[in-house]
Length: 256
Image 1 (cartoon, rainbow, N blue to C red):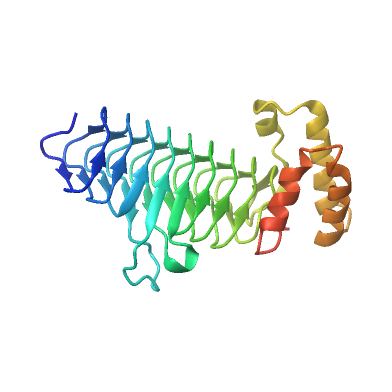
Image 2 (spheres, rainbow, N blue to C red; image 1 turned 60 degrees about the horizontal axis):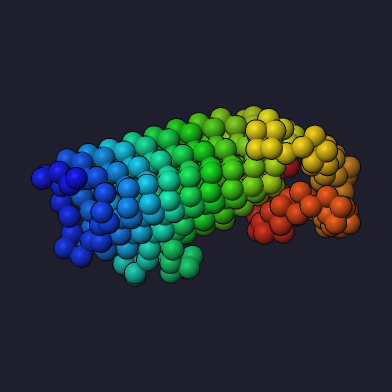
């Protein structure tokens, strides 16, 4: 299942059932789990571990050195979960010492052509990154996040679970869970109602999340005041926990 023109590093660990296409390059520290399919001319290098049943298309560059001027060749890693689809020309870089040394991508993500995940990012599972999505270094992304074409995030931003970033939406501040961002410049436009319905949230849960959005953005409260109100409600509305956690985890201030 390995094409004769592929270049495989001597120490690479390749499980049974892996397919590697013509002229692909697999570095000596790479681990490919069962069922992976690597397209022609793809390059996977560095200390990179890829989980089962990932499909990496032609010309992708996975596990290369971080694009960080402070990087001085120190050991770092990239960890990718299972069942990911990584399309043409996607680039995912390893971590840096300052960021903990590891870039992580979860399970069942869909990364479309020309997407980029920079050093030390932590991306959850079941996310969609449309063409040209760009994450700068140290960005944290929750589960089930959708990035429309050419959207992205400034370094150190936190994007909460089930958020939606509209086309060309490059954010420089934290996006809470469930929130929809769109426009130029990007601004909060409400909650990701359609996405929540698709993922099985009930009408009551969606109503509670919508009211929580109003508390954060429409009632004139400060961040701390809004969090206090949400914590009081979370006991009876557990869906608000994700929202609270995403706000508390951020370090760049809420997008307004």
